Image: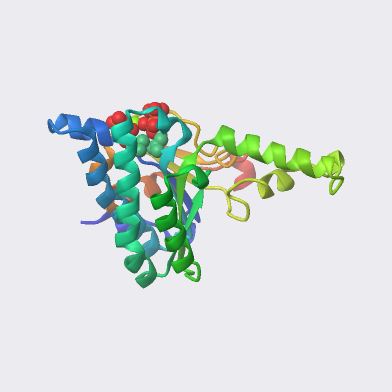
Length: 246
Ligand code: IPE
Ligand code: IPE
Ligand code: MG
């Protein structure tokens, strides 16, 4: 029986962020090369996107490629870029059919030209969709995002369009890639690693974290439901006492 029926739709996270990890180890366990793990991981992306859209989650952010991932062997990086290109090309139709808008966070201009072109096409082609935002973190890291925001704010001060006194949390928010998107209430990481790996450093300040040993290619709808149920069983106190919340 599916865990889906136990989910309280009134208490659904509006934004879920996912660190998709464990593709390489999954492949290795099967005696295959790492790239096979990435290819198989695509079906887990599809399941997660579908499950979130069906439930009514409004924003789903998936960490697909970090700024640090450029340091991997060249053949793996290039396979990942090709896989991204191919997957986006294949999925545009489904995204449109399901009313899902594709967006990105990160410095996508540094991606290979062919991948960037396909990506921009998909972003344009899905721009009018309203049911859910699928946000791919590509060439993304939290520190590079904050550095970029600081530079932009400093430039605005230099140009005297704002003053130091104008700086507040809302202003910083508005200079992030995620401007206008609510912070994730729930962050999921697969593969048993318990770290952020430079993901959404600012936006995850008060998120609930869910870690699962499941390797990403084995992640599926039921795994997502488990994470949401765990989230729904927690008390989010935001610095207050339990009694205050009652
Ligand atoms: C996550 O799986 C995919 C990316 C980072 C692109 P990994 O490739 O990191 O798999 P492991 O962690 O080595 O098993
Ligand atoms: C984080 O996974 C990045 C993505 C999932 C895209 P990594 O596998 O790159 O992270 P580390 O190296 O284990 O911290
Ligand atoms: Mg990894």
